[in-house]
Amino acid sequence: MDGPAIAASGLSMRFNGFLAVDGVDLRIEKGELFGLLGPNGAGKSTIIKMLTTMLRPSAGSAAVWGYDVTRERDAVRSSIGVVFQDPSVDSQLSGRENLDFHGRMYGMDRKTRAERIAEVLELVDLTEKADVLMEDYSGGMQRRLEIARGLMHHPSVLFLDEPTLGLDAQTRRYIWRYIRRMNGDEGVTVVLTTHYMEEADHLCERVAIIDQGRIVALDSPERLKDLIGADIVTLEVEDGVGDEAVRALSDLEGVEAVDRAGSTLQLRVDRSEARIPEIVLSSSRAGLFIRSVSMHEPTLEDVFLKFTGKKIRETESAGAGRMAAVQSRMRTRRH
Amino acid sequence: MISLNYYAIYSLWLREMIRFFRLKSRVFGSLAPPFFFLAFLGFGFRSAAISEIPEGVDYISFLAPGIIGMTLLFSSTFGGLSMLWDREFGFLREIMVAPVSRLSIVIGRTAGGVTTAVMQGLIILVPGVAMGLEITGLPGFLLALVFMVLIATTFNSLGLAFASRMKDMSGFSLIMNFMVFPLFLLSGALFPISNLPPWLRTLSYLDPLTYGVDGLRGSLVGASSFPPALDLAILAACCAGALGLGAYLFERSDVE
Image (cartoon, rainbow over the protein chains, first blue to last red):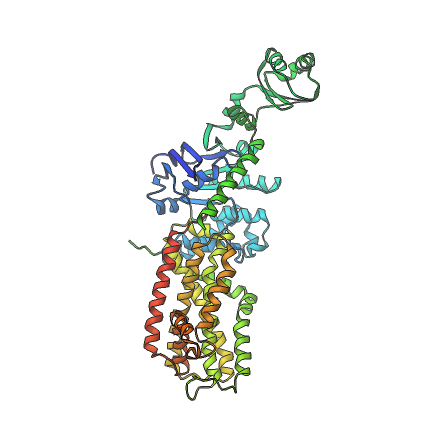
């Protein structure tokens, strides 16, 4: 196939007046490991559902592997593998039986299935557990099997919706390794959603930052962080921060920007280690009582802050709440 | 254009088979009520004089086909409604995202549900025979098998139709108690419906299981209220209607 793996233009989804996805334009090349980063409720999963034909877009269009997601649904479905956010295995079947079921659903014959099952189990290190019932798998093992299943039928594009949600740090690293391995070894185009900054940073070649249904920034993690450039110095202060204090700090040499959030100040500072004494001194002069000072190199969290004016974690509860309210309204409507 | 994916149909059927043979305790659990009905009503009313039972047919021979009908009704409705569990536990998404037509999904699921229901019906036939049910012969048995398949398909499809319209499992017990139980009691599985007052008998005539039970009685015991051909025709029509309704509503249902 010529052209990009995924091309979307003006892709939108409206639930009962709430615009969950708002005119998303996206182009993902073949072989990419692409991430959609944003807080819960930002619209990432809805984008994935539209690209995987589980939801029909209310406006705009998208093509996956050259096939239109509304008009050529079966062709799209044959080209993709999906690992859903929530578990989607039959817990009464063994790992092997779940994979076998999947292979048959995709029209694979017995011999092909047997060979492929061995391959994908090997890829996620589950060969030994193949004949154990899914209900006896741990959460991490189950997720690995779902990843293996998503790859089972040689999809051109693999979608992973929050692949490491709720998993411990060690399992998360394993899963990253499997995702890299299949992107590298099998050449599968991978599109994943996540609200973990470090996941997008470590894993993805390019990241689209999503907020309130829109893409606010899109580039490689390195270049996104370069947008911030300087280091981040965080001051925790007692009581509020007055405008004068912000002004005083902004005027300091090497300070590029000052963001204020309650009793926290975030400064973008060039060569911060040499300038911290000056910053502390000026703060005291401006009447701020500093409780703690910390500094770090830019992260995607800072990029998110720069583009949206808020932190991913703060946005989380509000966004998730709004989404839940919409979903419960939809539920009621259908009864 | 109708497209059928045979591998997928087989896969869905096979899944039901694996689950049936794996969840033995659940199968035993669901066979217990019909078995107790058969044993206690059979022994309890063995020598009671019940009017309108055909000449030369004892109560156990009258009851056993009814209880087989009951087994099929409950297990197949449950099989159709089990889509609710698949939705609840997420497996439905795995089925729906596959490049498989929804009609194939309906056929595969239904074939699996019908097979397991008929197997349970046949299991209940064993204590029936042990208690004195005399089967007329092989042709009768084969005809009974046809009736079993039709009964199971009808109610599996109705279960699927309901499940397609429900968003969660809250309606499940409502359907079991207010639809399935009355269908069972109205069907004449336990007593001749001619003993019912006319208004209630009218409801019996509207119950597809009435013709199923009567057909089973006709084929297994050789004594029925309606001509077996009529039973077969009405039940087959109900079956086609239910199958169409189930497939239509499933086609239009949402995954999420």
